Image (cartoon, rainbow, N blue to C red; front, side):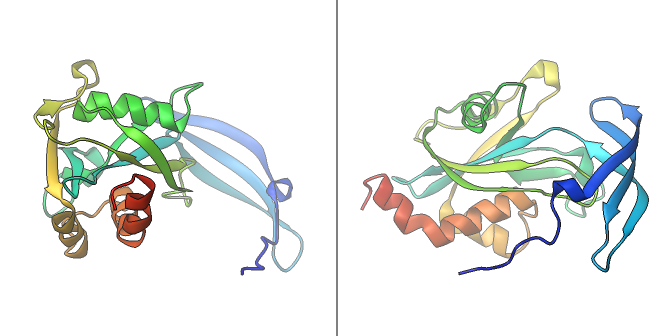
Amino acid sequence: MTHWQPRFSAADAAIIEQQRTCDGFFKISRLKIRHSLFEGGEIEVVREQFQRGDAVCVLLFDPDKDSIVLVEQFRVGALGRPGGPWLLELVAGIVEEGESAEEVALRESVEEAGVAIFDIVPITRYLPSAGGSDEYVDLLCARVDSSNVGGVHGLANEGEDILVHVLPFAEVCELVGNGTIDNAATIIAVQWLQLNQQQLLQRWGCV
């Protein structure tokens, strides 16, 4: 049982000045911030904050075939990646105003993979890059029937070109283990499933 508590709260930090420095597809603001120090007193610092909105990633698991549905697509942030900028990932999307994480998962599963999902299970919620980004990721797992899943999907008006793969769970675990799958959300979700597969199968009446 953990007894750790944070030393400070949201009340111990304040934005003094804010300037928008980039207002494109994503947004960046330069912030002057005052916050408390562990040894007493306060400090003022200037930091850039990448403001991209919250996201939802969903692990699509077919328990009957012991398979995972993943999507392959171009990622600009991976342009310098030795294996190239096409990543094997979870279905994912940005949360639009008024949407719940479950609604995003339902929408994006159809848009990106052409598949309906059932019984959405929360995995965790985390900050992928708190040193510079305000993004929170809701990580979910959902049941799918992967029998007729495949092909190329995505919204043409958003420049999406998404290839869908159905892979055995054991192979996906191997791809995580050897570093071929190198994006955080997919690694976390696959390792969660490795730890929780039996409980999930029991929940879904598969054992």
